[in-house]
Length: 351
Image (cartoon, rainbow, N blue to C red):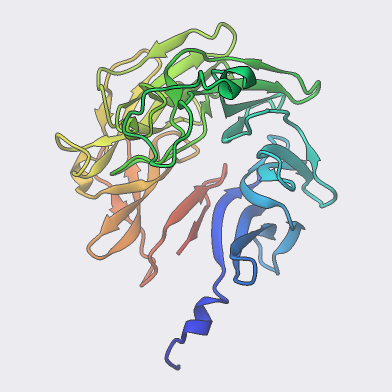
């Protein structure tokens, strides 16, 4: 052993966005390395076998690479990335390697996305286009009211909405509309930005809806479901604020989400479970007495969940049944930050 030096931090590699392949035999993740010469982080799309062996790089050199997601048949991996100065788009690459090809064509860029269960459709989130045209800006008719927004704001904020992309034809149609927005900026206290989640039958999407597009209102959020065929939005709960990270169970219509245990966001975040029928649901982690740190996942039998939660000065992975007290996994001195669950019930985590 030796003391850690400043130069050691320059060689640290971070891992993010891990996900099991549908068959459970491989894991995709993003390796993030600092590039001090160009003052940026470089991201590489990697795949590793769960049986061991060296990870294999699939994609290098694309900027802002994030959110790798396996296609339901396991043949390809889609992800968000930028090329040159273009807005972020959805790209896909063969799971065996090769040249990525662009799938989406969103003029304002793609923020989040999710494959449908049958692999025929991708739901993605993109901001609306500018409210005013070029002529209005040139003639200084582009005044707008500033709310509690980013101090560098130069134009009125616009909401983000869900679009549906046909994987086969490459065409897209808008699914959600109006002044409300899919959550697009990190909340101030708890919760996180997550992609819309599909129901097991592919008929519904559930997502975090913000009351407007202003940065300061990321606490005024609720979980809602939208019918993929009709676009009709269904409000699920009566909470006006602080709902985040909804996820459908792998079978049935149960929906998990995060909501504060106490009266405000500074208290512990608990896992609640409701359904498409609506209602606030049941606080399944109330007896756990731990703050769920935004990361959780359903178990494949839909009878429980696993979550990364704070514990003393560290973190642990807890298994939380739908009914009963949760319990921690014994991981020694490791402090996990992210966890993924395979369809076969295996766990992978970053610590």
